[in-house]
Length: 138
Image (cartoon, rainbow, N blue to C red; front, side, top):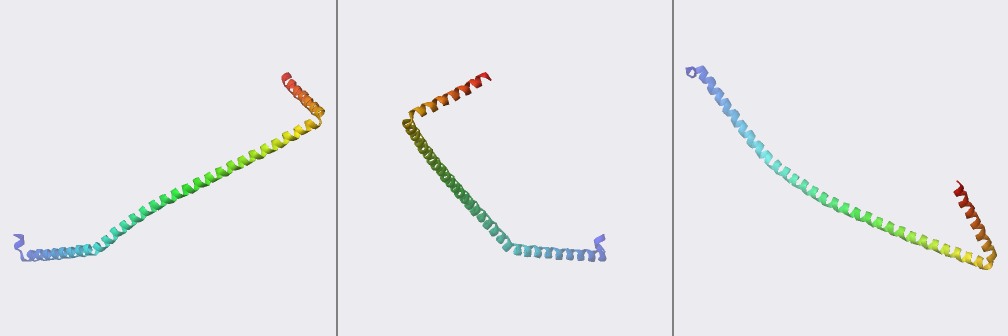
């Protein structure tokens, strides 16, 4: 048989020894890699946990900041609306005062010269009548 041949037997033994040495080296390398990767693996796990915590904080704080910014904007809008309302009220009061003054002045003029007031009213009536008659003809 082939394994009975001393040269073949020697080669097979040599191959077996080389394979055993290679397997031992692979086992050592795997053990060394596992031993080296252990602390790195723990560091990576810790880093991932820290990143998750940072993301959570950013999400909470970002949401809080967004809410605060929204509140500030709403407060500013409310303040602007109040100023506009106040300005509108002031404008209405000013216009009302001006109208009161104009009405009082008109009354005073009518009292001082009633004939002039009647003449102006008649003239205004004639002008309005002419304008309306002109529209009917068109």
